[in-house]
Length: 126
Image 1 (tube, rainbow, N blue to C red):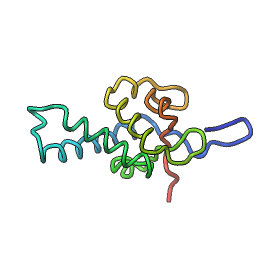
Image 2: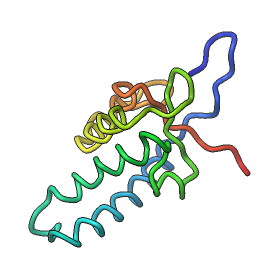
Image 3: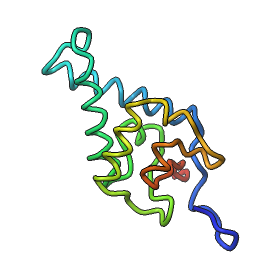
Image 4: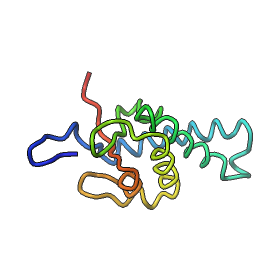
């Protein structure tokens, strides 16, 4: 995102904000999944909803509902644009595995972000 001759587009998001956004998204996924399955009995429906939310919200729009509330955006690491639905789907699948999300590099990019070529950044103050 940053090169020696260029400043980063915005500051990478901290773990606390990212985790807060994920908790909001997870609560929404549990709510949606409970419309067609009991998450206490069948565990996979909320996970599928989380993967699809990542694909269809982050891919073209750059943020899930939780990220919007936490004032975060997921953008392409290379150019700051949208990552697309396919990379959003890959990112969501790896996020659902959890371990890739907690292994971060110096830019606070989890393995799921690195695989999708994305970075989660703070939105500037309005």
